[in-house]
Amino acid sequence: MAQEYDIQGMVAKIQALRKSAEELKEISGGIPTVIRNAERILADVRMLEININDVAELLDK
Amino acid sequence: MKNEEYWNPVLETLPPEKLQQLQLKKFKEIVTWAYEKSKFYHKLYNDAGLEPGDIRTFDDIKKVPKIEKSMMRDIQGKDPFPYGDILCVPLDQVTDYRQTSGTTGQPIYQADSWQDWEYSTEAYAYALHAQGYRAGDRLFLPFGYNIFIAFWAYHYAGQKLGCEVVPGGVLNTEARILKMQELRATAMGATPTYVLGMAETARKMGLNPPKDLYIRKITVAGEPGGSIPATRKRMEEAWGAKVYDQVGSTEIGHWGWECRQQAGLHVNEGLYLVEIEDVDTGETIDKPGKRGKMVVTTFNRMAQPCIRFDVKDLIQWNARQCDCGRTYRLLEGGIQGRADDITKVKGVLLSPTAIEEVVRDIPQLSNEYQVVVTKKGDIDDITLKVEIIPEYKNDEAAIRTVLTDQLRLKTNLGYNIEFHEYESLPRSQAKSRRFLDQRPQHH
Image (cartoon, rainbow over all chains, first blue to last red; front, side):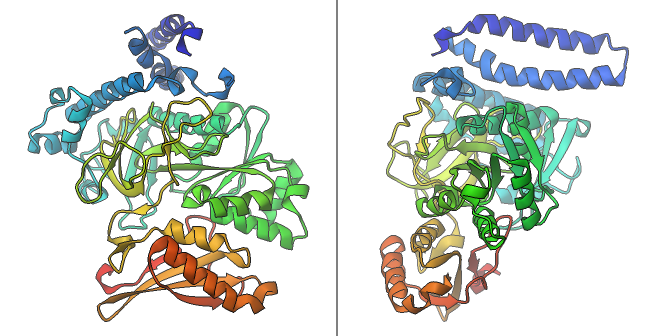
């Protein structure tokens, strides 16, 4: 069923989300709302990784 | 089967050999994490002469020492307070505290980071989606949210799916029923005991739940009733709704659920590793047909990892492949009992679910019952307390005969049977304690 989806496309977008959220934290200048909301985004990004990226590695083999 | 049937079609239909590869990879990752971040796990593995790199094949998983509740009790209450050195993250990353109900001893404290809580919610989202919950459903929670894990994840997972969630926490049963009716709630989550109790209360209020209320899906948890056919039948008839079982615990998370096929509990094998071990030999049971004790690993709960947790619950694999198309394996009959002394009576491993199946299959009996085990001299003595519905009061002798025969057949034990006044046995909203072990050695 996995072949019906653009898994590699999703993987790339999820990686970009992580990079973007981490960079946002870095340039936050310590503004609490930026840091904490970026942390929450990263928790959701991790759920996307668990559901897609972690599985994608196996599908390629 | 349409793809929207699955919360994650990529993972839920993964071929078994790929799923096992994923499980091995995840298992190695969580063991490595715990070894590096937790003094407790580091010492445990060091003492066993094991390093994470020693895990190379699926069979190597068995080399990893198991943990059990007593070990967690020993470490908690110390720094980092109150979790002790099982903790893998700094305390300031812990956002959620929960604890076990303590039915088998001192409660276990559970720390979760926000990411861990997302993981618990994600696991529950798999369950609700598989049970047909969708955006547009209005979920009602007739439950007092508190320090225990129960139904918190149902609430958050419902939101994640896009459902509307109505918290019915502090209301009494009558007020909850009226609010459900007023808002036309379409689904609810509760313990089997409370699902049955609410229906009784609704009828006393002059309401007929299938006709006067709008509940069409019920997810039950906290007790085995959802996987006991006779109990499920009672609940479904009382509400005119589909009833689905869901299992989990504070330390593990939400590892199993029924899908719309109601063919048994699916183990969420993408997020959890469930092993079944022979109670006597410890050998792995891979095939259906033999009951053993559950050993479970949660793959991505990072603050307080749960790795090869010896739960002592009894389960068995189901030979059936579910028609839903998921490759996640099914269990036969849900949680069937416990593997410790709590349910050994007269030397026989007693399955409380078997007693419930017998009682709930007799329509002249109420929903409630109680099992009391005592000791007379050196011999265990077991009493079953039941209530006859008033209109069947004259059938007592016939009911006693059926009960005695069926209990002997299903549990291999003889019981003293006591008939009590209708509605005189204790009712509960949360986990019911219907099995009372009053033997001296347990005190």
